[in-house]
Image (tube, rainbow, N blue to C red; front, side, top):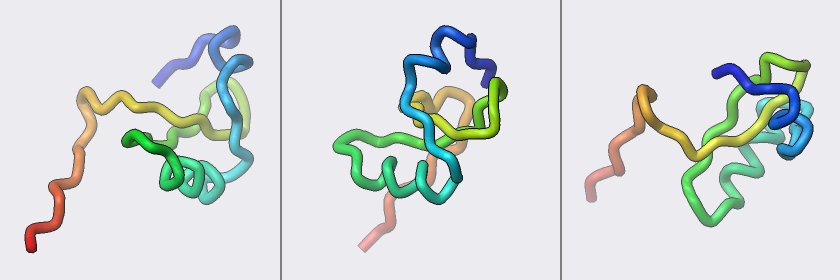
Length: 59
């Protein structure tokens, strides 16, 4: 995923993948972390197009 610099600067940044995963788990919507190509940090996105989304566990 390519992030424009202006967009990168407006988004929340997480120093590690673990920190990004914790923030995604606390969100009220489904988010996934991704590594930013503009720096050594992570952002969150709600986009799932082209990504494998795990099926919900069946009871």
